[in-house]
Image (cartoon, rainbow, N blue to C red):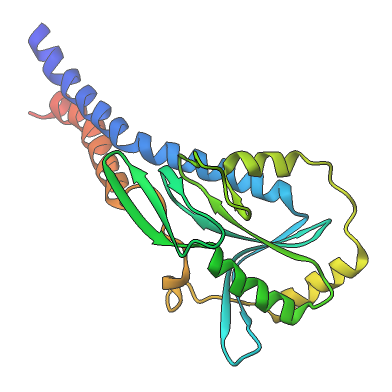
Length: 224
């Protein structure tokens, strides 16, 4: 009887534990993303995400995030990096140290400069500022270059006293909203930042294991 009980309920318990281990990283990712979105929303009175604007030279510039703030327009460009980061405003190449590995990547602030140039083309009289937002578990032991934000900086910016939006800034925001074009999520997918977290296969496998766990005792108890 004891062995039968273990066989009936022990197997689904193990399957549920395995499913939980698979889904926990996804839940942590979802929680981190939700916290980040909340902090970003607290920085600006309005927000545009994943839009294209004419750059004034026959091309288009992609903007991951544009925010309307009391100080003008703020653009944010996310960069997922863990570990130790070394970089400077005018260094062409930055370095990410993960354990014994060093990964070099292009200075992300240069991309911000191109985006700022496009905004100034459309709104020459409105202050525009850009920041690269490092969203991973990283630190800058030599100091953060100007124009770099981390999650902590987002929290500070969101807690700053909010002032009323000037009518000229609000009008500029409405103009940008009319000129901006939302990207095609299929055709322009290459423009989007790389999603954090594991493969969707992890979630499907967790659901499959949970389904087996729920179906196992029913099959065992009611099978002839």
